[in-house]
Length: 206
Length: 206
Image 1 (cartoon, helix red, strand yellow):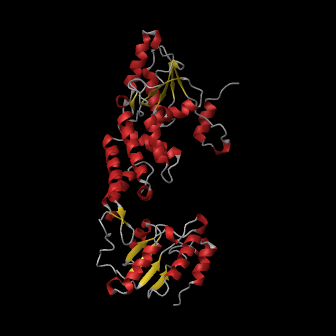
Image 2 (cartoon, rainbow over the protein chains, first blue to last red):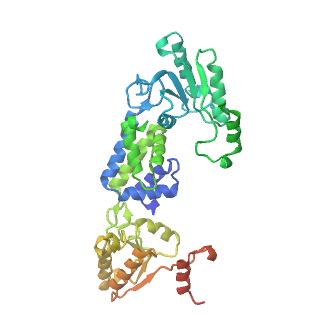
């Protein structure tokens, strides 16, 4: 049926390019859109256009924002502007902020160092991070006292942590990494052995 | 984070209205769209607009089509134009056509009779079906020899089958319903008892 309706086939193909949307789901979404009132399609089209036109990266921390220059984190004077949390992707910011355990500002790397995939430090926002920290060396207003690395505990995350730890040495800033261990509410007998190993290694004295 | 980017929030809300797209998936799709090249967004917007502008219902069988009047099924002279398969939704046509066991034409009811949800025969394309069959009574070119009901075997499907069987009596046409039973390749010990009951009732003599 789809192959007889070119515009429908095109829509299903475009939807199929989205993550976790397979051909079957794309077709189901397409039929739903066909059945939707005309104003749903115009609302969705307008939302897509506005996102494409308005959303950009903050020139300081590289998170997504609609502000012309700096995002609302970087201009929020109630936040500790001397403490930076380093994340891989913009979507990592929301859960960290929701934890309410961090009230500093962010730096989005937009990726990790992954030699196996041919991605080096120059392919992510590492140079921009070092410049941010360097600027604070002679200017107390911009001084970065602590850099918290909130990266995944996988091969790429560990490689990136190693690289940054070396690159930020002698920059007069504390460097820390978020703790990896047993999740709150997690059952010890269901936790994988690598996580449990890390939890034991990084045990906290009471 | 989302609440600080109005256009992004709007896009996520619109995506969240699609079936099987929860708030988490909507957000993930939104971030993916933000990271996509600009031409993905324009392609998707164009596809949405074309579908909304071009796709309409066939004036005879009510399946979706881009043709100005009749769909390609209703104008295909290689198909048996005297045999109609009745389906609930346009998306039911593709799998039936793919079975290659049917080479007639279709009639899409766009729903079922569901008294519990307040949906009667006048809310779906029943009148149009009866008109199609009536037109053939005095015109051999339009004569409908068989009506095959390909509706689900649930309460609404059964109600609709009952209603149509009665409404199409004395219309000089065969009325049949697709067989419900154990699927090909299905394990008898895994099949629910209602399906198995139906399979035994409708056993085929060899």
